[in-house]
Length: 318
Image (cartoon, rainbow, N blue to C red; front, side):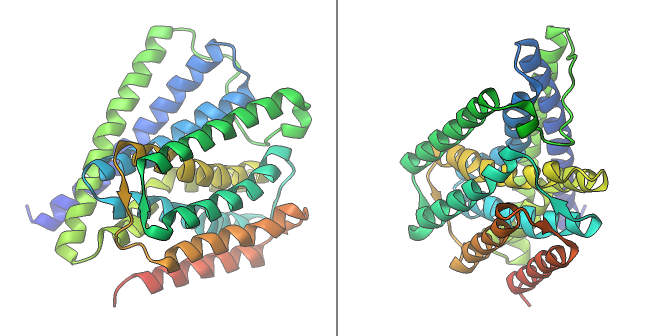
């Protein structure tokens, strides 16, 4: 079998395993958390959010262990650009997006702050173990703050339209734990296949690991977020569409990079300042829409898509 075909099978197989592994992990963790008495909203904001970030986390951790910091950091930077510019851009073309949820409104300025913080951390193109630990402390604080906010305010203020968490979870704890374990194992194999395929593809095409991380890997690991956002937009659940993208970006910066850097320090080899500027710019562009209560309309959606298309054109070698 030609080498390129084998590499494509590795990449596609890794993505399929990551998709199903994340789905099983989230279902198992959700059922377990609900059986332990957590409210559906808190489960959605914590367990589900963490679970959907596990594919990116495992890919970045595997890359960190293999000293491929360009893939680890490129995966996060590329995913964060994709989540706003492509995913929200496409969603806004389906239907104008308006934010009502107090939690989602609060998350957008937090994301702008977290993105700027990452910009500063990457000034030396390196994320140390200490900086990774700091990022993990930030995500712990963010989750704690969300839980406290939910408990302090009324359900109507924090309601995220479209967030679908079952009220009656699976009561068979052994089956739930088995689903969790199978999900974790599947994710591990998926991350290994995807990173192996991505590195080999970079080698035979003569591309940098960072470029592969910014494009192929980030688009692949962002597919579940794209499906969730488009379905939310189709159902006119604007809060879920925007909350999904913003929450994913927050977890990417603080949880994914924090965990990867704690496992092994990351060198951002191949990541350019232009990549970071694009990530910061699309995040800042999102601020006026939710801060002033305006709608992310089709014209703005088209602008985001134009930015993403232009960014890919700029990235890919001639």
